[in-house]
Length: 153
Length: 153
DNA sequence: TCCCTGTCATTGGTATGCAAACAAAAATTT
DNA sequence: AAATTTTTGTTTGCATACCAATGACAGGGA
Image (cartoon, rainbow over all chains, first blue to last red; front, side, top):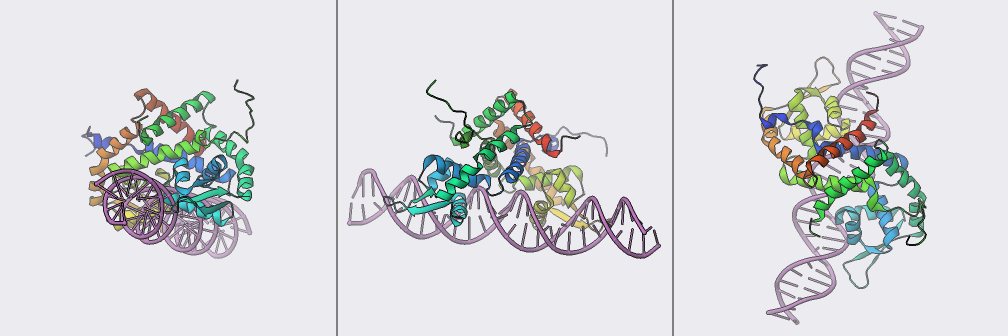
């Protein structure tokens, strides 16, 4: 029956118009750029290194909060970096539950060697947008994220 | 000026200002909303169902293209849906390489049962933005993705 | 001192994604 | 037309990320 168009809202679901689908693709493109520009680290690994470089020594869990990863994910990331000798772990003497993480010399060097590339990744990711749009885009993303960490405050 | 601002690109890497980091978090929030509203499917699974409902019977590879997944990922998604009896696979008689995928009755029913929720997911994800901003945001995302599929039409 | 509640780290299971291997079809050459 | 090359499709193996559940420790009362 080729006739009988139905206005049912159910019928009007177009995958290509959904935010989630678009965000996934934008993210895929970014991941591809990242992998090409910094093959030695994943975005999450680099995020961990960057925060460690900024904060010094922090607990695994705390680092997870700072980099938007849950503890389990953080553990995996740290394990892989530790295996490569880029971070060192030691128990917190004042709290036996905590595991303190810090960059090694090698880790800091490896991080700093990639900072320029990291800036280039951001630039290339935003390339399709005009300078004004880039600011807009970042602002909109921030607004969306705020809602996540509890609109309070 | 609060003292000698430096344009040094290397020193000024702030994780929280990078697009990739923001996109990852926006995506995380969306995934959480999705998982809460449609626990029975992942976004990729639902994308596959939606495209199958729209297109009828397509090859695995083709479905991957339509849903922005590479073939390997597509296979995993299809396998899981097939195991639950939601899609059926059969070899293409005219091209022995191809595996044709189609929704089963159950699959179509399960998909349609979630379409309203899927709309709600998009709405909730965009909730933090004003109606005007939502359009902006989607437009900017599309621009970013275009660059990916080769700007060439 | 003995709970009680919350935080921290870890483990197990599931899903996505890439790169490489393999199979079949189509296009090209001889 | 047969043989060769190129393209397209599917599958396998490996790495990463995430959630849910578990066990270990800390601090605040009763």
